[in-house]
Length: 412
Image 1: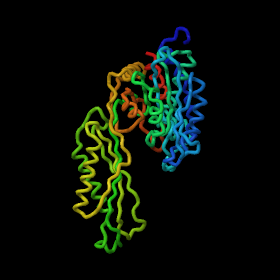
Image 2: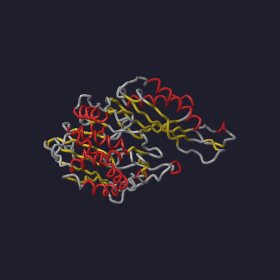
Image 3: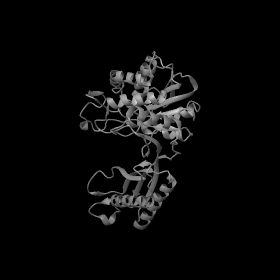
Image 4: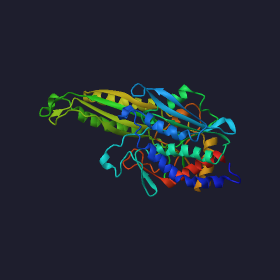
């Protein structure tokens, strides 16, 4: 470390990283990293660019490849980078994901989605927040350590993983299954993938997630002769409301740790039925997104959905199937007294002058899979919550402040 530098000097040094942050964004945001499910070829092109950057600042860099024959490379990349610390038995990890979602309706964007467009203090582009912000934070902290010649008190590690947007099978789940000793319960783990606008929220818990597909079978007929058919659209619409009412009635507990404090049950996607107006559909398919407080089990929710659907169809003469599309059971929250939470809370007070708030969310992050193994994880960053939206954006000032916060939580 440079002579006579204290933590305030180091934090101030981060102010000079603005141009690096912009250049880094401009380098990787135009390189699409979409999962096959989202019409892409995976993350390798973006990973290769980021590897070139990471190797400049980290002592050890390697790639853990998750086999996937759906992409041209035949695998999905997970970058693991390490700067050795004084205590080599522990690591402070920053874990971010390289993949993004598609841009959606291009006409809703004011700027080119897959460019990093800088307007004053704001950077626009698909993935600049989710999860480019985590990528930039993780790499820039390593750059600051290297340039100042700082050996951190513990190892400093960054994992840039794949496949977070569609289940993490080829991302962090693969990494911790392939190398179960890579991240341990004595490590400090930060997942920068959720937060609030001021940067005071530390997420320590996540709801269980259940996606359900409901298929209602009636009888197709000509629309002018409805007595010959059984309108699956009408039945499915009524059943949607009946399930919605029942779920909110039964699972009404509120936990102030979470935002929002209730379990949520939202009908979302509906599949196309008939292709013309004058045919009564014989099948109606709809989906429900459930975010479930840890107080309740997913099996309880499933049972209510199935019982409600079967009772409805028994009365109305239809048939129904209920299928699980995705399931993520809730896991034990991170303790408010864990070292990573205490360090991060202290750093937020030092850098941002704010009192941290410990909260739970309905969204899902990589933290879920680590907590399931008994590893304490803090999920945190300053977020204006523009992920997946048109004109997704971040504020440079927020990113610089967040880099300072990570540095302070590592070194103090």
